[in-house]
Image 1 (cartoon, rainbow, N blue to C red):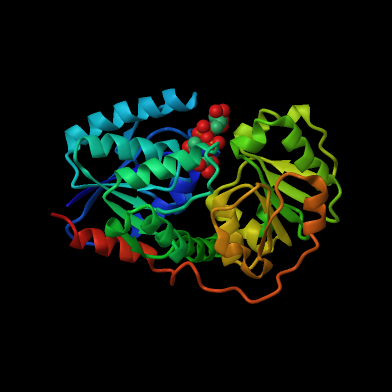
Image 2: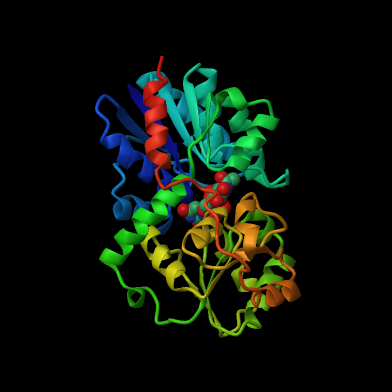
Length: 350
Ligand code: UD1
């Protein structure tokens, strides 16, 4: 069986690495990686391949940055050529980026089976490009791998239950594996001098492209009782010169997938607008403040492990003092989601 895995952005590298590790141990499955080139900076792309041992992409479409329509269109055009040439039995797509949507559109038009990992997530905010990508991908794909029961219920409510299956979250698998890898290879002091800090990441378009929101977030950071370590996405960096950064905020370049594990593990709390980081914080038992008006990962809210603060600075400052009120529950499977995914695909090829 031939599988083509389409990846292009940071969170996809992490998830695909985890599934690819399992595929490698399956006889009879050949995997070809296609990198769309959505993320192209060394520390947004290459470092993930080297640190996580992901096999070299056979194809890189080098689409780069651009308006959503143009970027996605270039990906669809390139993927179509690759799919026609390689004739895969399955195309695997991950998450909610423009690369995910492009893989789903190009593959389904060629009648190739599409499997979507991390299906059924919804923020119910249609202004997020990711929300449109998720909905369209779920409806175009043939197999939907749901990471939680809630995601499975959402797919069922949208009439997609026949092609949906709960497998758990591959990010739980990856967090367990990559934290161990990180602890074997690096130390916190290799990354930062800080030992008592909050970790913050900001990259969502709704926050970066609205200067008043970005200012409000950084004003709240200036009032926190500990230093705020902030590995900054290039999208956010473009706007940072227009904002006052106080000296308790330490901005660094984006870090690799092993470094981020240690930074989360050693942080006091996490402040983020990333979906992945909200979950990694939960898996590593770190309280999180979400810098958005809503979250797809509603399971993390139970027991006060994650609070949705939006970008209101008073609210962020107030919520930093809220502690979890109960033990965490197990909503995300047993850390074996990747094995379930590969087994399911191998048994469902026609
Ligand atoms: C994308 C995904 C988002 C995911 C995130 C992880 C979409 C719509 N969004 O957002 O779901 O959580 O990746 O990081 O697909 N840039 C660089 N170097 C890079 C990559 C990006 O400088 O290597 C800059 C470019 O100026 C670009 C901007 O960042 O215009 C945004 O990049 P883009 O790929 O459009 O989306 P992300 O914000 O990274």
